[in-house]
Image (cartoon, rainbow, N blue to C red; front, side, top):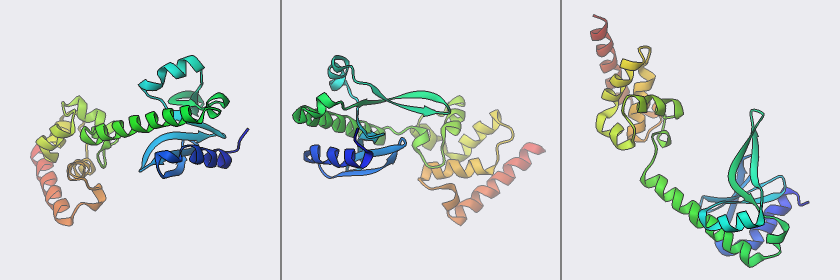
Length: 203
């Protein structure tokens, strides 16, 4: 059984042709990335490659296990498969599969950049994304087209206790800014609009 540091060193040595491999903590272990694209994970002394369609025949034939994490006491299977001793003994195959994993991860990253989800924007978590979807705001394009104020009004109609922080969050999401870093003039303008709107609705 390799320890984590030994496995990381071994992985970097075998996979050096992929490029400079950086590591950082992830999933309770360490991720392996080339140019910030994560394609593998070392957990509990084992290397796991990010699975992709080109690998499925090997995964099925070799019956290699997936990476399983325990979240709140429940096992969660991730789309990474373990590199077993047989694969370590075939460095050319290991490198080829790793190259596929990196290529697939890079493609997914490029798709994410080209077609981001609402939750990928600043200030937008899963809860706010779900709230926006419920009122018909289902894409970044629709959020930007509606603007922060009209989106807030739609959300307010469904959630009467919605406050100004959500308005700031929406504006920041559209402009790519954390809500606390919005310029003072923008915050003041939004605050005045918020106060006027609330006064109108209460009359």
